[in-house]
Length: 245
Image 1: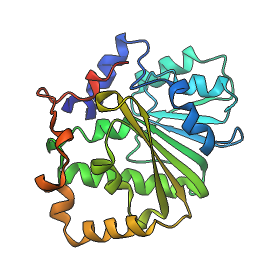
Image 2 (image 1 turned 90 degrees about the vertical axis):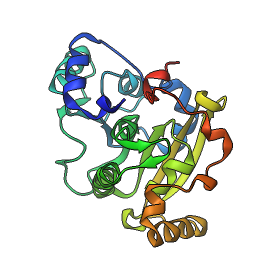
Image 3 (image 1 turned 60 degrees about the vertical axis):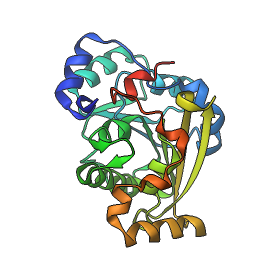
């Protein structure tokens, strides 16, 4: 659904929708997240939406959370809803233009926000130039606001074949780990953990070299490189809205 990248769509949706949690909830991802988080972390939630994810984090002891979303309607409603969670902050801000200083956060979390940006694609498994450039802007800013040793956690339904190559970039100054949660197929989710200051693994360095050598192949993976099981294509192209657990 290409509307997912449009602010007007979200403003209209947040006018009436009170809460929606993309993919699974905090408890489902906690087993992975707890190994990469500390209760004293300064946490930035990218594109928080009206998900209860931040509330559950807060109630689990992670109090220093800044939530941002470019919809003022969303932020106003969530700030009012969570008024008793006094230490949590809510700001109207576009993830394409983070206003924070360098090294402001220990942890940055994305849960489905990058997926919304990537709905601007040319087809199944094919990333258009505009989407690629947008993701590079976001990830450059994420790396900038992270302290050395800080972590970027990205939660998504996107398989490593399609998503990991976006993260495996030396310019971001981090390594990449991949974890999976769920039963496989459309019920499987992935948690990518990037730690700033760590080097890419040798295999990821090779992946980056391959991608740099052929930007066209990077943006449009060869059909023979895609395993058969990935060709159960959603005919209406609305991947996100069909993942409602």
